Image (cartoon, rainbow, N blue to C red):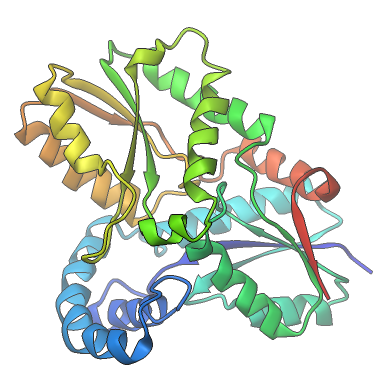
Length: 319
């Protein structure tokens, strides 16, 4: 029997064309783990208003950041997968996406057929939240393949050290007035119902700062980005926070996105284009992003070590 590791990221449209983006968004936004509104109310709104309006607009954003060999998220995730495989040559390391392809269930069944017994499923999300993890769990359960889930890794010292090193390398390049830790937001209702995500985000920042003793704590700001829909999500929203920082005279800002390990639409388009433009239009001078890990060799080594010692991190064993 060969040990197996399935890395899972969110997913991407197959192409940046409107039809493919619409299909992807329909699958993503129909997941009850993502949108908790009753389907009888949500589906007419989704299909009648949101998809017709949002698919075309999102397609233009995907086209702006699409790589010659495909979606940035999938390209970088696949490169990371290959790096982890190189570190674990005796393992069967594969990649799947919660939405779109490669499919989680199909990949797990293929791994089982290839001789993997109880593969480890590792979501590429450092912090746990229902909106990213539950869809993975549901699909993995439906596959019928016994597996072990690594729930999160935000509190792993190696992860925190690696992130701190990337922040410090960027911070030293210029005289930044503020360092913004920007996390993907989630609906506040999820937090009220017990989702640990906000606590894990705050713990991530605190843990990383332990390895940045020379970074003035008064420069550190927390924000949340990528809100969707009319309901309240975790605040402060990054775009508003950037404008506020400029108003306070902080015109040189460094942004780090700990909840994104690979570049995607949110980092390449939302932050590097839209939020940059908002910041500059508000009077800001320097806006820089700490690079995501992508296929960084040290990060791949960390994931391999995390996988090889699953008893040292929170896991769920599913039979």
